[in-house]
Length: 256
Image 1 (spheres, rainbow, N blue to C red):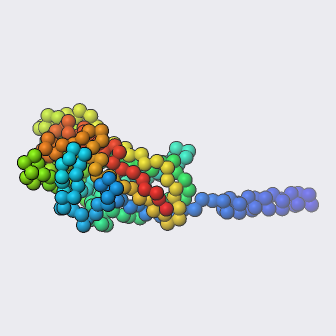
Image 2: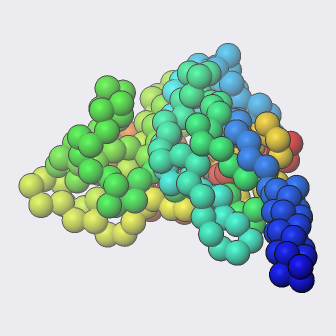
């Protein structure tokens, strides 16, 4: 009789414990990610392309005709240090609204995370020429004489030069390279990880990542388009300035 009572008690405890675990379990949800762009607080969208609407820190009046960039290894970091990959890589194109927002395919635990981060461009290990068919179709490749692989960013437009004449610029970020040709060398890495900080994941929530385009021209180096406007891909000094100026270009907008 005592054994029967003990068995019944243990069974009730186990059932109660299991039910408690279920009640306290963390829910899971999909998350919407949205990418927005601005120039020192003034929103920039597809409708703003091709207009001479922006003045950089040096004083160059310029337009933006194209802006697209690659992010990879987009991850959430839990408070215990564990990471969850949200997206392998994604090409963001300001002219293509469908590239500016997407919903995660995998469910993500709700709650607080210590950081959300991504790599601007590709790490060297992933930056392999011809490996990504979708990027190949976008003419995103870098010529083999410049080391191959893929662009990190293409920003194109026009500016008014010192003679007040419209001139084109191609602000193209790639892996910094010297000695273009059969044996290029790489003075330093120019991809970088962007740490956006803590984020809260809620049911059907949204994470908004914003780029301040003006930052690419001002911090820590003031960019003069009269000096650096075209043929920047084989210019390792220009690539390193892009790398440095891009460190503060991205921020996390209050998510909900």
